[in-house]
Length: 309
Image (cartoon, helix red, strand yellow):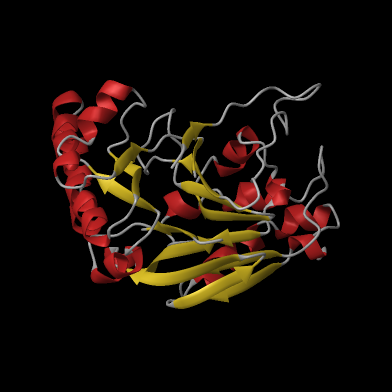
């Protein structure tokens, strides 16, 4: 397994657009963490979003606020993404859709989106994301662009089974337990013999464990009980109480380690950190303290613009 932090440079004469293109190598499945935070994240972790690169396929998984900017930082313009997956529809996972969709309708170093954007997710996705697109009707009509092919959406709603198969990349969707927001989903991506499984937001559940079995990479959300307690000491008990509510519908670091152990996953990557601690090695080591006693494989504390292969 390889973990790299993406290095970006300012393009000339513009401001970092496609300055350092991110390219998928033939035969590799690459997972890029665009946003590793949560709804209460600060300025160093964006809300949840991920990019899967496999051959010529570019698949976005979740689209929290800041996603369009993070894509550009990784060298991908929003119009270059034609497939967008949603795990569920809390705002920290879909609030960046308007920006992504709108930005992709303009040309810059690369052409604007010329084909419909395909949207994948559990039941209810078409109603919610279709409604968000309609918010932009007046804007796009003023540009005579609302009916353009590139501004159309094609929806694929499933709760279980294969939801995507193209260019050698196959994706399966499965239901997870994220409390009352349901249905919520996780995804399994397979490309040339490598499997990456994404938990989405979930409490520990059988469906996730079964789908994660034998995964080369398991990307899993997590909360740290120790750091939830510390948030009360540092900020206020109100902050601690707010974070405490996450326990029933999320997975602790130790629970994530046990899931990876039971599944026999090769590499565990944590994301959607609760609370969203600074990307500092000493703090990250403390956040995952105790996991190594449960799971003996590689553990990576995810950071924004980190690439795993």
